[in-house]
Length: 296
Ligand SMILES: [Ca+2]
Image (cartoon, rainbow, N blue to C red; front, side, top):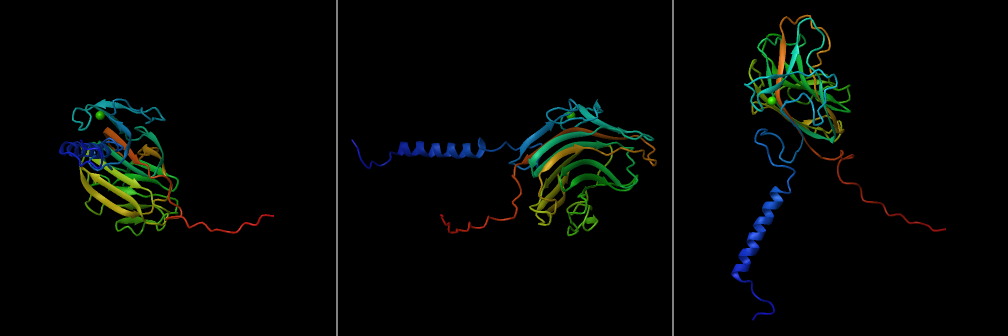
């Protein structure tokens, strides 16, 4: 009988290897924040889901309707979670329309938003060319995903990095606007043109920058699975996001509107990566200085 420095028996080695395989699988799967959802192919794999909303109700699970004006309808053509969808309608000659839906997202600096959306065939578009879809708001920038283009003409998905003049994003190749100040950023990979009367999947990722001028924030957006804009050098500012807002800012009469406009939203998903507070100043802290202490 072996009592010291015994060689491992082949069966024991097999058991140890099997245990190691199980341990590696557990670390890779159970220990992850969540499994990847194939319905949102560009959501970061390590994101925490904050909202997965089929619009079977207007609001809930943290999504709130401050004006209590949301309307649901049935649309069997909806692509992600038929048949209930949010219907955002604007009628000619009226101020207002649709509703505003908000979600608080404190302490996250890296956010993903995905949704299924259908603008109606009669959607003429705003006379200033910008049709806001949603806002992601930080202390430095109430930035906007916008559907941009001429009335009755082709409109594209673009991103508006609006701010009060404290951010400069004019180094971005497709930026148009103020330097410093707000700019519209257009696709640099594809044009993001949106067809009317059809469902579209939109995905968006926005990450704060280390400082207001560090050019290391991320802005990416996709239309129907195709990358439209890919910028990994934006200035968004260091603050975390504090609010998501589905908001078209339909708050005044539009004298050029002649037909009923409608946005339908079938499903809304919001997730985020907890990157903690901004690293200010960037990099590791200085080594502590050792000083003599004189005891009286
Ligand atoms: Ca739905």
